[in-house]
Image: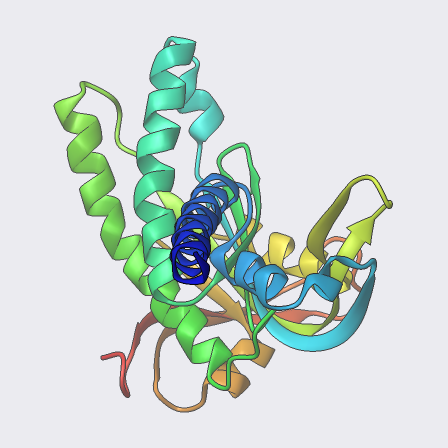
Length: 244
């Protein structure tokens, strides 16, 4: 009887373990669409990461935007606009994940991505630039798909800035969001606003953090709204080193 009872207990444990694994995979698949993989993994490893609060962290911030997107969509049906955006994000999100970026926001046709949080990345600026170049190259795939569907071509601008910010869980006890706060977020948005389609513009801080492996095609000084001193920005045409 003891042996039979032990066998039954072992079988129940095996079933429970399998069900727990299936539930875990289901939750990962479901919430992975709403949270970045990095944030989700941090929560699974440390439940205390759900607590409200933040920390100072040096990160590289990326802002992307589709140039002239509003004008492009005025002649399209809502279903076509959604299909075009979904196709665009499907490609871009995959590229960002490959370069270990954390998607902080998807707002309309824009992406706010951070490199260096929640996990620190030693070569965050280089990785962010390599990601931006890969994203611009991947626009060819996006536009091939659009052409197949009879949809117009899209062009994207990307801005990058490296700065210290506050990252962490912001909100209330009932609804929180892993987010980034600091003037650097506004500044990267200003940098991105100077781009034209297919262009990558970075701040001086990104250029210094990335080192001498960048191909700089142009540079200029701008005076973004809300700033008192000019900001030097650089147009990036390539990256060497391990990324080539």
